[in-house]
Image 1 (cartoon, rainbow, N blue to C red):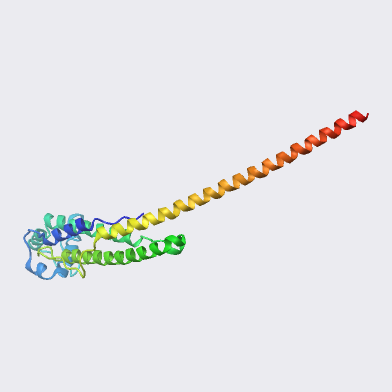
Image 2: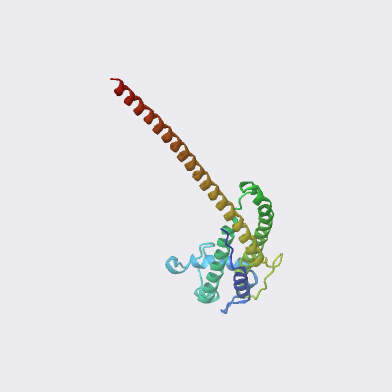
Length: 231
C-alpha cells in the first residue's frame, strides 16, 4: 500500500549536480550576481531566434552584436543543457514530494480492537518519518534551486537533518500493510461465516417445513382412505 522514493539514489544525484560546473565563456558580472544572470538569460531568449530584434525591449537602445555574442557564449548550449538537468531533477523531487503528501494512513479506529493498538503505534512512527522525509526533500529542492543561480560554482549539500532511515521506514510501512491485510482477511472470514450460518439456518427451516409437510400429507392421505372405506 505504501511506496517511497529511492532517497539514497536521489541524494547521490543531487550531490553530483551540485559539484558539477558549466564550462563556458563566462561573464564575471553575471556569475557574481546570479539574479542578474537569470534576468539577462530570460531577456536573451526574447531578443534572439524567432524574436530577433536590433533594439533592447527594455531601454530601447541598439543591441551591439558583440554584446549579443558574448551573452550567447555565456549562456552556451552546455549551460542550457546543464540547467535543463537541474530542472529535470527538481521536477522529479517535486513529484516524489507530491506522492508523499498524498499518502494516507487509516485511523486506528477503523481496525478491530485487537489490532488497533499496534496499528496506532506504527502509524505514529510512519507519520513522523514521512514528515522528516518531506523536510529532507525540501532541503534537496532548496539546494538545486540555489544551484540554478550558481552553475559556475561547486556547491555542497546542506540539509537541516540527516538522511532519513528508509529501511526502517519501509519496515514500519510493511508492518502497517500486514495489519491492514489481517483486518481485511478477518472481515472477509467473518462475512463468509455469516453467509454460511445463514445458509445453514435456511436449510434447517426448509428441512423442518418439508418434514411437517410430509406428515400432513400422510395424514391427509389416511383421512381420504378412511372416507373412501366408509362409502
